[in-house]
Image (cartoon, rainbow, N blue to C red; front, side, top):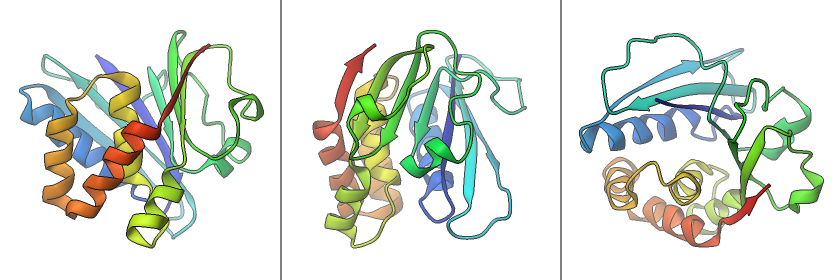
Length: 179
């Protein structure tokens, strides 16, 4: 089973990106679910959610306390909330940022990291700071856990071609690092 925790701010598309991820896994005959967690539920507030997927039925229905992967849609959260808490050894970290890797203070548990300017991509293509679909492209490239063609189809179905283009651009621009 793969467990992912997504961190972002209200309005950045954490919920929709998780739903698209789950649909993509299910469409390929896998099993998946998403558990959202909202705090004060207003635009700009920190939000997070949990995704699990596997090739067999998933009975666990609680928060993800020890994720295999942490996806961070807003790098300001690095100093605001404990985004790396519980990351498994050999963990994967995917961050929307323009900062160099050396400035990110990644935990020792992280063995693979990816950075991409998902906000820049979203602003250029969509005119708004909604980095979720670009981050899905980065997720597909970094982990290899989802089929990119299926992901693109679900993004197009949900949001249209501009968002699909954001995912493709992010897939190609994501910088990968083995730590």
